[in-house]
Amino acid sequence: MTAPGTLLSVARTLDRCTVLGPGPRAVVWVQGCPLRCAGCVAAETLPFEGGTTVPVPELARHLGALTEVEGVTLSGGEPFTQAEALAELLDAVREERPGFTAMAYSGFRHERLRRGTPGQRALLDRLDLLVDGPYVAARHAALRWRGSSNQRLLALTGRYAEEVARVLAEDDTTAGVELSVGADGSFSWAGVPPVPGFREGFEEQLMARGLLPRPDGRKG
Image 1 (cartoon, rainbow, N blue to C red):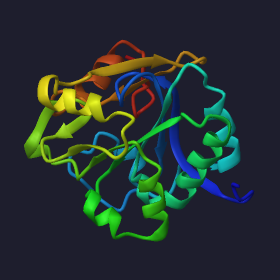
Image 2: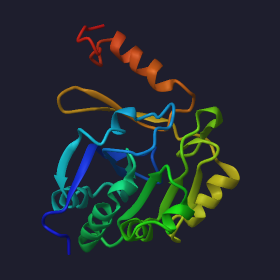
Image 3: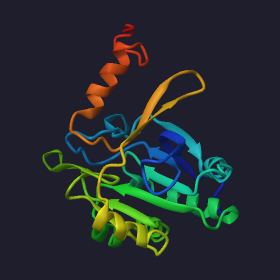
Image 4: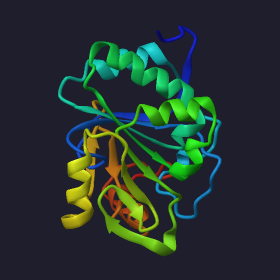
């Protein structure tokens, strides 16, 4: 059972995404990362300050109600800095949806996580897929669900083993990015950019069209 007081620090969530893992998936970006990879595509998630504090049972209920997705992808930030809470989150969702799948990104290598804290090992044991290793800008590559060629796509259960084998052997190309429009008309995007500097150029175009606010508050 999930402890009532367990909290997660969350940068943002997305209810449906098709470019961060197999099939339609929810995405949870956690807040905070001890690594500082140059060129990180989600630099706003690196500080441990900020984000939104969310009770694990509340987020579990939300994810479990998303019947059009087959699982969740955990990103950030660094999910394994909140591993125990995320393991509890997956357990809580799977109480209602046993087949709910889980994928995570980590800047740490799989081997290190296997020697990590009990919480880190617990989260690892609940994952179907892991993308491991830090983002290295000099090795940027347009790969499926990864940003640089040092990162590995690891099938940790049989759930996606055949798909991973096919991707690595035949179809290891970018899944692209997706643009989402919020209920308030705001724009956001998700995915692994196919080229370095993609985010800066893409967001500049959105700001030029008035679809994203500029840092100084100006429009267009």
